Amino acid sequence: MTKRFRRFQGGPMLEHQWTGGDLTTFVTHLECSLTGEHYPADTLQTLSKAGRPLLVRYDLDGVRRAFDRATLAARPHSLWRYRELLPVRRVNDIVSLGEIMTPLVPLPRITPAEGELLVKDEGRLPTGSFKARGLVLAVAMAKELGVETMAMPTNGNAGAAMAAYCSRAGIKAFVFCPDDTPAVNVREIAMQGAEVFLVDGLIDDCGRLVAEGEKAIGWFNCSTLREPYRIEGKKTMGIELAEQLGWDMPDVIFYPTGGGTGIIGMWKAFDELEKIGWIGPKRPRMVVVQVAGCAPMVKAWEDGAEHAPRWQNAHTFAAGIRVPQGIGDFLILRAVRESGGFAIAVDDDAIARAWAKVAKAEGLLLCPEGAATYAAYEQALADGRVRPNERVVLFNCASGLKYPMPEAGTRLKLGGAIDWASLVSSAAKGADRTG
Image (tube, rainbow, N blue to C red):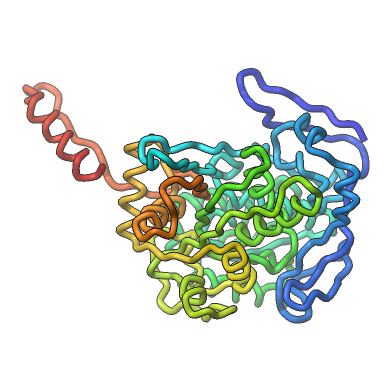
């Protein structure tokens, strides 16, 4: 195989063009996450016979022999740099819109003096969210396995990512959203080529419609964790984070959790990295962040349960974590408990305050779900579950520019005298109220 890369002046490598045949891959089989039963890797699969997510398994001894950190360091900074730990087997099935390595942004003005607080800003990815990681792998594998039509439920960002990558791959896409999904998400899904439908219900109601259509029409159901490959895309967050921190682990990760693909993927990544000898046994404490109006994982964690019943009357303005029930609940809870972490819920007011505080103090515009992680960090710092001297990573899952923001601006009328002292005083009071 040969490959040609293009560098862009003044910035990172954002695009690559691959030519040639097969990639060096190490996938051996798929495995039921509940029973351990094996399934063939190169056939189209959904859930296991037990109705649970399938996990991709690799010949990790083979990866360790064929791939080292020095080889990785010489590669372009894209998601595909980790290809030995990814399932795509053929170059022609790679789809890409420029999946860069997302930055770790420190928050020095609001971090305890003895600690370190970093934001992994996933809003820099294609379609403006971390959903690009999971969907680029799901669509690439769908292409490799001959899928022509895909469908999914979404609160917005996942549907936008699937629409974009399906267009890139020549796959027809159908997306079902709750009817209060932010308009920008609905419009970008449609602009990127998908058929989009608004449903008078929540995301799991949309999921039921996708499942009905799967039986009636035969499209491939790409709902969260109902196919094996979104986890593989999301696990690159964990590999990338470890690489950025010099193959060391942070003390704590705060992760906004709806369906939980990312937390499951990162936990899988850390296990694989240890088995190929790139990290040691140290793990971060994994913290599930949910919202008080929809906190099924928090309740299950507090109750010592392995599964989370459906949350009734789910509500929050942080739409991405308004997921009443997740099929991978036991995998999320397993990662939290094995890591010594915890699950925490914050209310909408705390999220709104955190959103404004980080933006005004640090100049970083989080999305509401990302702001929830800072609100949770503040709460955990106050109650002692996180210490001021720890290295903490917050995941910001999307660009704040994709979300409705509070009205702002003071109108000035030309032609009249301006009371500058009053204007400045009023602005200062406004800053005090929102800072």
